[in-house]
Amino acid sequence: MTAVQPKPTSVGETFDSLSPATDEVVGTYPVHTAEDVRAAVERARVAAEWWEGLGFAGRADRLRQWKGVITRRLPQLCQVVRDETGKPIADAQLESVLAIEHIAWAAKHARKYLGRQRRSAGLLMSNQAATVEYRPLGVVGVIGPWNYPVYTPLGSVTYALAAGNAVVFKPSEYTPGVGKWLVDAFNEVVPEQPVLQLITGFGETGGALVTSGVDKIAFTGSTATGKKIMAAAANTLTPVVIEAGGKDPVLVDADANLDAAADATVWGAFSNSGQTCIGVERVYVHERVHDEFVAKVVEKSQNVRAGSDEDAQYGPVTMPSQLAVIRRHIADALERGGRAVLGGVDSVGDRYAQPTILVDVPEDSEAVREETFGPTVTIAKVRDMDEAVDKANATTYGLGSTVFSKSRGVELAARLRTGMTSINAPLSFAGIASLPFGGVGDSGFGRIHGPEGLREFARTKAVARQRFTAPITLTSFSRKESTDALVAKLITVMHGKR
Ligand code: NAD
Image (cartoon, rainbow, N blue to C red; front, side, top):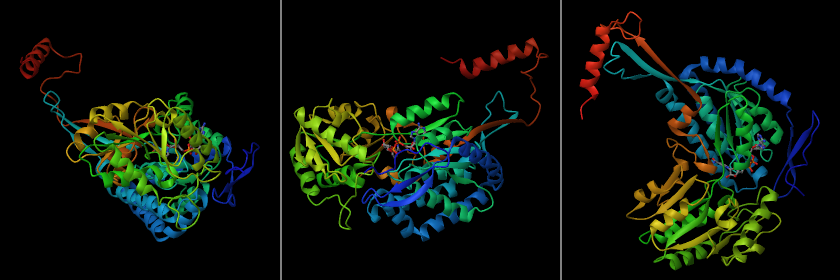
């Protein structure tokens, strides 16, 4: 059985969303065609003008109402997330709580970071008043993944809405029900216009959104799809934000709190069945504490188990095709001299994958180089933290990273080529709404969350207003030679010093 029905092709078709835990049909949704998508974007154009007209205060009020509805119906939302992803209710709640915090932050801070600001005009242009503001782009298309179907797409949807845009949202084909729930909740508090619309379907529907004439595409998903989206968007110079995959490392220094580092590794690697873009996939440990650290990680993993029961720490692998990838990475690591100190190839079943911890894995193996997106982790011994930094950076990805070190945390964090780093705690940057989220290299570019996330969905508008006529006119054919001479003298005084 597959988790999603075979791809329907004809117009008017639907697809079923299945529970990855039971294969039960939990919802049926339309496969929207390119025509449907274009119609949605046209409706969004009208809605965008109306939404922009509400101003910062009006939009903040609606976003706060939306947040209230989500909060009051949290158990219902968590159940939909569990039905479609199989993750424990507590995990569904955690991602939803973080998303609510982001809605609150974006609603509160949009005016501060996007509203009109004065800039210094400089001495030569001192007769001008200079301002900059961040206007809405218009219509933003958001394409989401399934692994955190609330937190992840809302990182784009919320910030695009707060910046004054209308949004057409295509959730993953694995989690259309979660997307619908969120859009329905928004439309309850914004009934006047289709400011946030849902379109459902597979890659083709997402592709149609990219070429529909939207003013920006915010994509979260795999690096391979990100490349296709960027290529398709190039034809119309449609700007894109790409939030793609990762191969996030943890660095453990000799002076680290090993219990905390081991706990963070176990949770970061295995929670959500390892299906976390910023999940822990590699660990580099100082040789002085390596063996003790490995023992602690193994010990803390003993009671971590995948399953569908309430006591299981994490659920199934949502995409059945991923099971083969996880199996392949473990097998490759073992064939090339690695050792499984917990789990192994047999830990990967037909639906669930139990934790696997690998050591002595060559750095050029798939388990170290490629995104596994499963509950596995490699732990490597390093001579010192310079080697740890070099190895951590020797990847095409650069999303998140974590450093455990009592004395050198900030220094090591600065040397890691990733968009985000947390020090002495796991993934904490993801919970702080004011911090931008995003990566470099194969992990993508652009930022969601924080002031940068608001500005990602805005067009920067610079305005210079003449306050009074300058004693010397520079931008006119009537300019005199004496003016040029004066300017030359002035600039020498201002900038000519050795
Ligand atoms: P995916 O790339 O298969 O699909 C993501 C979305 O893109 C889906 O909605 C899909 O329908 C759509 N899509 C597929 N082909 C398309 C095309 N040609 N044009 C337009 N849209 C298309 O990814 P996934 O399996 O849903 O998600 C898992 C991946 O997402 C992992 O690599 C993970 O690391 C990454 N991810 C990244 C972040 C981040 O913030 N950087 C967050 C969560 C997940």
